[in-house]
Length: 393
Image (cartoon, rainbow, N blue to C red; front, side, top):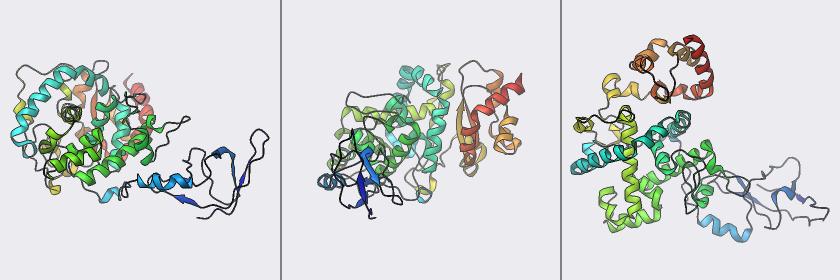
């Protein structure tokens, strides 16, 4: 696209030189316009002739000399294809025998230790229902398994202001360079890494990019922690095997623990959340977690045996979205706002009345609603709660 003319505004009454006609190239990795201007010209000093595209003040401005170096750092395929065309394997939770094999007992012991040591932290995080709902809706849009939301839990405990000693910031702990590559603005005036919606969109794109490279969610989590280049080196040292257990010995200890913590967190939050507050019973049967899902075949995606799948079947479960609530609501109000059959809402939430009857302040419940009504629920959540309170009083 050619800019017809670019003029400079004055700053503090000093005239600035008129800029010559220049090209405005677009780097597709962040979807923003990148103006090739002299570095000493600030965005707010640039006037664009009416009728041409305006570069927003927070657009990245680089010089011609720096453009080549910048483009060299951009992976050519970081923009995901149409998410609806992508198919992902399920995230292997503890107990998936087809994935873990003889390492399953190791993962069971790790998970047992994790819930004993970090259960109370997970209780606190589980109360952030609105944050989870936002993340889940964005991941669903990209067809990424919802279990990946727990990567944000172990990265930041869902704290948008979290900052690591090495400078990673926000819910998804992006470094500034990676954040910019995936479309986030990071400068002294604005840091999108702290924005839940924008940072989760960027994380979804990054996770999709890493999955395309490594084809395994545990390797994706490893790469997210130590970097794609370092993980690829570990894969090469393991003889090209794209398997976490094969490359584990070649990964930094921190990355090994990061992957194990992710698996344990996802397993506990998805399959053991009812035991977080009361604690696991002494006679808990860990073998009850075992199931035989063939995670290496995309045709079986999500079809492993879980309580909801057993009760409703995989096709119906695929239509559900889980949102955490920390106060009882009226399911009739919910069905009315979502314009859904109240009998379906009631059948999906067959165990809801046990939650509402024995509710104690702070307790949470995984409410099941139609996936295509998730945005409506998020937008109307406050109204649903207020209307429910009026109905219940």
